[in-house]
Length: 300
Image 1 (cartoon, rainbow, N blue to C red):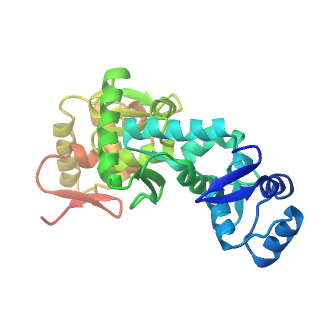
Image 2: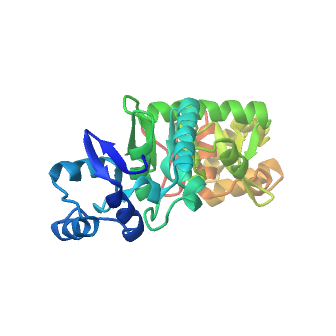
């Protein structure tokens, strides 16, 4: 910005207009007839359609059609940092989660302009360097910034593979939810959990260890090598006794077979994880599936 004017599309915007917008419209400016007339009177300048267009190009438009000068939203250094850091995340992961980037810079943005992650998303689209699209990830809804020619789940699949490598090589097969979030700084704990559930189900398990939520590889659960056989034999025994293989009966029988409280010993945090573990390790006939809390025979 020069001292006396801002030039855009060969239209010179007088500094008087910039100064008034900066000082008198900290809450934003709407390009309606009344606001334009007041601004024109204050600045002593006629604001025609060409100047309106040039002004809009210099400003950030929020979803509610309120406009702000970029310098009012955040200083040039902060804008550059946001764009550069977003580029680094795109280089590393191919995408990032909008609210996570917002959380890192929220305290350096004008709260009168940016009231939340939705406003920040529009602001990032205005100042970003890359050709990206901000979209809701299919099936899960988290707001993701990704390359325009990319595919959300294709990118998240690659991140799932990175998660596996990191957990095995850097954390020895088990990592706390907090540490995984720190490692994958571009994504919330919520989105990481969804990636694990949708793309790593059966390989990673969400467990609780000493009250801390962790992700643990199947090999690190510590189940006996013959657990699949033990599970099959336990289910056969329940059938022989004419006992329904519901969640409670099966858990009791497994605990007796193992000599420990199954869920407590192996840090199984909830019924969903317990049912999934049983599904994965059951490899015998007949085919079984959970239905209404019973792990019963299923049609092929």
